[in-house]
Every structure is written in structure tokens, then in C-alpha cells.
Length: 335
Ligand code: MTE
Image (cartoon, rainbow, N blue to C red; front, side, top):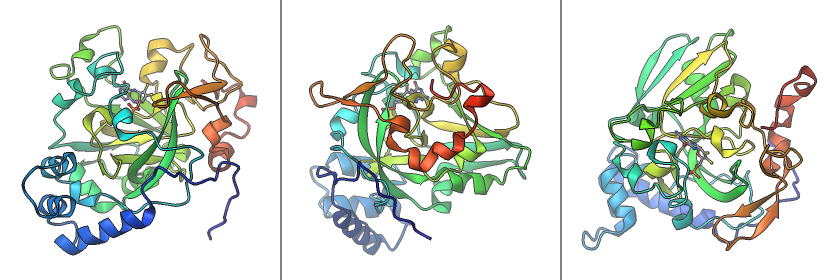
């Protein structure tokens, strides 16, 4: 049963492409190719109108990525923004991806990452371990677009139109045993192409973790696309986590492995600097980072405009119940 939740932040996102436009493009795409089987060619037609000359960025993506025909996916209207979407150019050129360097300007270096073939292993406390090809996984799930706020622990934020599928669907595919309490997620390990991974003081590969309940929460998205196209490499292609009520470092990029376990995973940042970055990392404006305040955030791409930060990044109605009673048990929920 759908229950309409009234939220203070439900105002229209004027910069976003209207849902009807997305739906029409999707219909055109389906009509062009008869579904998801002839992906590359169909996407090329849909985006370029069949004109092979002067390929746009979108057609280049369509030609290079076999999943391009899945985009744009229909937008969910359940998750609304209180701000303009961040410009695509800004979100795709201001990134954290330490495998490719510690600056925000790694988008070109990240192009070295080969994203096909790409296999995802599901193991640990599951019914049956498996290895799935990313394109086979995409055929098993239903993609949708969701507009989410994205809040980095460094006190900046964006508003991003992700495309992906609820992580709950992957939990169902994995069919974990009742003894599984956590999901550990792991990024590729390729110091040969990702020069940042040669920095030995970081605990590579990048690891993150969620409880199984968090993974199955409706907000938890495994993103495969953004801005109506497949994810660019610098944003974590071909598969990344999106948990918008947590600080951005939880959103592990370019995942190759999901391990269901009864032990709480120790994440990359927790191992690197546990006093500043913990397991839960839920957004809370009242709990400062040891070195800076979390009370407000800079909206990237607006020339320095700041807005107040919201508890759980404004998503408390969806997720707060996951954490009932945990603080009383001594858990550090906010960093
Ligand atoms: N995942 C991997 N594998 N490596 C990283 O360095 N950085 C994290 C997270 N996921 C990171 C990662 C941090 S600190 C943030 S804020 C977000 O990715 C940034 O995502 P974006 O570049 O798409 O904005």
C-alpha cells in the first residue's frame, strides 16, 4: 500500500528533465529496438535520430557501453528534491575516487578503468555463491531514476539524478542465510591502471559495509547510471552504492564483490582513520567532524552557496527506524 508522506522539502526540481520527457524517450527507445536485446544500436538511433554524423557525447556512450539501451529509465516520483539538480558537467568533473588520485580532478585518469567485461561476485553466507556478469545482472533487475541529495563528509553536497535498482533486489538474488548480518562491498584492485592504489598508506582495496537491513531499505540504490546515461567511470561505473542519508564515503564505487557475513566489515576509511570515519556515518548537522562543523554544506556548482545540513540528509522518514536504540548500546551513529 502506498502511503503519501508529506515532507517539508517536497518542492519541484525545476532543472530536472520532466518525467514525461524521460518516459517518451524510453518509449521511443523500446519501439526502436524491441526491448533490451539490441542495446547498442538502438540507443544510437534513439539519441542521434539515426544520423551517424557528428556523434554527441550521448551517442559515444551508447556505442561504447552495451547497457546504454537501458537509459533513460523511468523516474520515480517518490523521492523529491528541495534544490536544483547539480549540473552534469559539475558532478562528472568534481569527484572523490582515491584509486585515481586524491584531488577532485580525477575524471580523466579514471578513463583507464576497463568496465567490460565486469563481473560481480556474491559470496559468504548465501545459499549459493555466484559470479554475475554486469550485463546479466542488469537484465534481472528493474532500473529506475531517483533524484537524491548527495552529502560528502567534507561538507559539500550535490543533487544527483541516479539511475539504478534497489539493493533489496540484489539481496533477494543472493538469498543470504539468516546468520548474515552485514554486506561487505569491495572495489576493484588494479594498481596497474589506478595509480592512487600505489599509495601504500591506504588500506586498498576500497571496502564498505552495510547491515543487511540497511541494504534492504527502500532508499538504498545500486546505481548503474546517472543523468539518463550509463555511469561515467569517475562516478563508479559500472556499479556503485548510493545511500543518501549517509556521508558520501559509504557510496563505494565500481563494486566487484558483495560478501554476506556475520562480522561487521571494517571499511577503507575506518581502517585509515577510525576516529573520524566510522561504520554508520549517518548525516547529522549537530555532530561535528573532529576537524570541521557539519552544520551546513556548500552546494557544489553554485559559486559557494551554503545551506543548512539536515538530519539523515533529510531522509529520516525512510531510515531513522533502522537505528532505534543503537546509540543507547554505545554505537557511534554519526561519523
Ligand atoms: N569509492 C571508491 N572506490 N573510492 C573512493 O575514493 N570515494 C567516496 C565515495 N566512493 C570513493 C568511493 C567518497 S569520499 C565520496 S564523497 C563519493 O564516492 C563521491 O562520489 P562522486 O564522485 O560520484 O560524487
